[in-house]
Image (cartoon, rainbow, N blue to C red):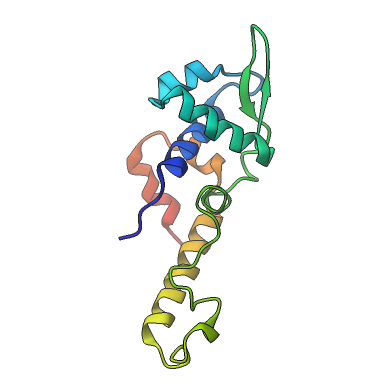
Length: 146
């Protein structure tokens, strides 16, 4: 099936970790690496990427580290996916039907187009705030109720 990159999975965990931290606290990279079980060098690569988005800011010094710089209601799962995985289609012909002379008649194209639309819709609705308010994994199913 579809597989998300390690960069996404770790980036997502880092964002969740920072979202759960006290609002004004900068968290040292070493703490994030330890708590999230991410190699420090790889963590720095991901944090650098997050700094470029503006979602995370950093501070140097004895009380330095990283913290979120975005309202938790403003950042959704689709934005995070797009950042780490890029905006891609399940099939090339979804957005460019001219790539295939069968696209007008292709059942497969229409099936994957609908799945992609549903996935985009679902991930747009789930914010970082929604995710940190989950106290138990059994509550996740509530995010997917219509």
